[in-house]
Amino acid sequence: MAAARSLFSTKKPKKLLHPSFETLSSSPWSKSTRRMMNDAFARFVERDGNFIEQFQTTGFNTRTFELFVSELLHAEGFVPVGNDPQPDFTVEKDGLKLSIECTTANPSGNDSGLLAYRIVNARDADLADIRDRQHNTLPIRIAGALRAKMLHRVDKKNGGKAYWELPHVAGHPFVLAIQTFHEHGSLAFSNAGVIRYLYGIEHRPSWDGEGSLVIETNRVEQHRHEEKEIPSGFFNLEGSENVSAVLWTNAGTVPTFTRMAITGPYPDGDVSMVRFGNMIDHDPNAHIALPFAFIVADEDAPPETWGTGANLFHNPRANCPLPLGLFGTVTDSTYIDGVYMDTTHADFIPIMSLSNSFRGPGHLRIAERRRDDILSQGMEAYMEQLQKGTAG
Image (cartoon, rainbow, N blue to C red; front, side, top):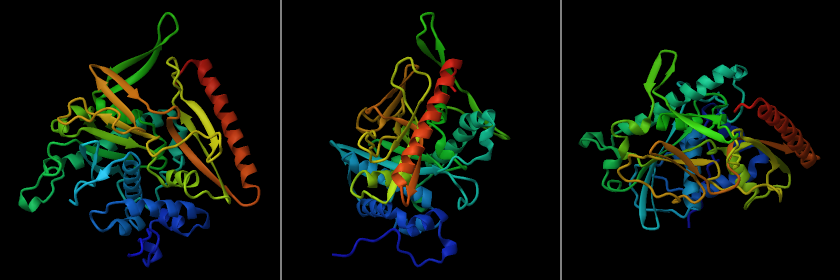
């Protein structure tokens, strides 16, 4: 039996390697992550033959996202079917056949200097600019990536077919999976901009006479950034009825593989990891996200699955709709008769998060202090927002 190929064995010159790959492949503290990603690659059905080359060089973020989607499908009980090179995944579960094509929203140029995993964007000091990027820049980037897949034609020499027209896809649900890597810190954006573009709506909180929360839903007609303007509402576009749903996450990343490794098959006693961010508050009157911070793999840490940070946005006009709950750990998002609804399948639903790793002598004590400091600061900011009566 041939030995399993490693994602991290390379003879390529250092100048060709993606900086994130180089760090991941060389760090002695990332051994659990590498083992987890190699396990995932052993389960990955490679259809184009260039996964390793792109993972190591120009396509690190995109290929990491594809590997994440593969693990999600595996964990959810989907079984690969066929060997057609496109779309990226064709799988089956409970008698339902499903095809998925992955894409990412990328920067205009080379992404070798991109720090999408960190909140490092110097523009974040301007709250108005953050809102503009969430409301307009993010949707425009997502629109470009999704439209490119909509317009793509397979086998152009023989007339070309859209993904959903391929014989092994036609008549079955077809999903576009997307993640945003278009700017520094882009993974910190929540799904609000995605909802805004896909359905052409925005939500604003208000309160009735009894003090109960009322969510107002308003139409969004377009997104504009500098000289670029696009119509909102991807699912309203001609031809979008061929897309059953859009799968989105901001967690198809290396830190997710690290967390799943050390809480699962590859614990590492030399590393302590703190995960922190904000999460959905299930109180029906909540309008502010709850802060959280915990030590990964701690007995009190909330459980994480591959679908913990993912949304499946269902197309209300789909020719081949997907049943709710097909992905047991992914949040189902629907917009029916003017009502938007998220159906969650767990208590812990992060909106965005970061992970910090600590190593060396006393790493656990350092991580615990970091956790406590973050949680204290987060709760202080949370209480200030409550007192102001704003959504932050």
